[in-house]
Image (cartoon, rainbow, N blue to C red; front, side, top):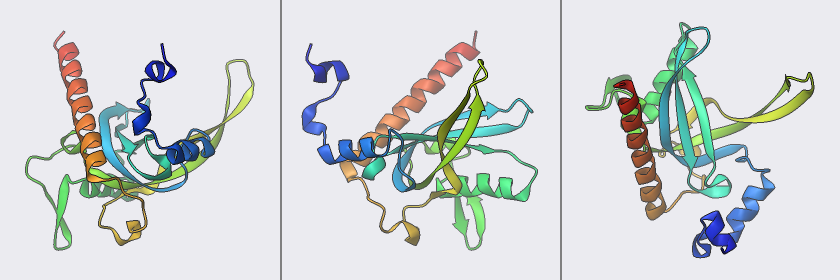
Length: 193
């Protein structure tokens, strides 16, 4: 079997510059803004009982292309936490502006309704230390979004962010929608048991 077959890669779709950028970044997307699509969503619960929404973004252009970043927005009693959930929902298309107010977009009530939506994400790295079961201290770099996290494509702060072409966006959005539908169907199948 050829190496490309084993990797599931067609060489005509590979850009050496993108490979070089991915290797330079150490296997994680570089810090900064990236053109992305919302590619996944699931509801999560913390051990404390607090509910949240885990959002998965796929970077579709620039030095972080093809990396995925997960971010959880948590329900909170604090104003900043509520604001963060609402601004993510607004910038991803669940709500729209009407003057200085937010109003629902018809047919959209949850993040699952906006899978495939394009946005710009602002990635940061956060180092943390943990202890293994054997008592060894280890460091890991988490890839997360900054507090603001998601920006709309027309935000002036995103003007210099490399963008994917229309074909790449269509493929990424369709793949995200299919993956979300498959996950929902699987969840429904097991919920019925």
